[in-house]
Length: 411
Image (tube, rainbow, N blue to C red; front, side, top):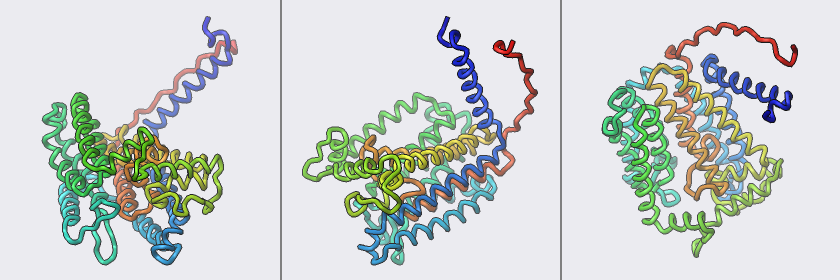
């Protein structure tokens, strides 16, 4: 007899766990899709609100030294958050057909904006030429390009339902719209954003039904190109060797990663208190931007960090429901690309802060300081929210109640 057979209590617990898992899966797949609308809105609004609060805390020192005011970064972030929330809910009412018709125009506009980076309007920040400076305000075109590429790939690959199962049919129709923006971002030395573009493209191909052998070849090619890109820049070599072996060399490439881990470790379970971080005082570089998760861990503790992870999980599950329930190939591919972009970027950022991944330089969606990233991330969520409101959902058949059988334990 097995251990479960010897112990009726364990057997009942196992049946209860399996039943709970089945009920969760049915709710995920069969529940009203409008629930995803509210789950997306709630989780993203909470993430954005926490982000504004943490930007105020993490940026005060930097803001005073550069802007002569402790609230300048906070005001800018809150302003973009307000605009982004309005844009998110506005896009949630846009018909799906409008996205299909406007996909090419959005991509062309994104490419034109990326081209402005290489004109006198372009600006270099932290070694990356990926910004446009107009009237004292900066804008990052690559953030808009992420959304444009995701929608355009969904339109193109949705039309190639049969051809996409062949590797040539999967690559040739879509590689131009993906390759040109990615190349332009690569020329600007922003390799973190290039990685996000690759994730978007891989997700679009996978959910379009591209053959798996294509991903093996593509992964090998991407790994080779990545190795060349790392070898071509000494600072990237220092980051990789520092991450792998702890050898920081003369550039002290490990400093940022070490200070981020120190901040996380000092937070403990409950944190030192909101606004009470000590390591944000010029110890953690980019504390309000790429490394804001370390300040969350220090001030709000492990529970605060887990709250952030939980909210991203809710957002991911809500988008997964759209993918599972959508009848439209376009909706499935677009949603998969967007959720891979946002969740993948969050995973890379948190992995970087915790030392699981090397320092790459990718902001945490909805939370890190940056108007362009926040605005486009909220816009992307608004696009997915619009998919939950329109009549393209798979109808759920009514389930006949199953007869209950008497339990052996009660007999």
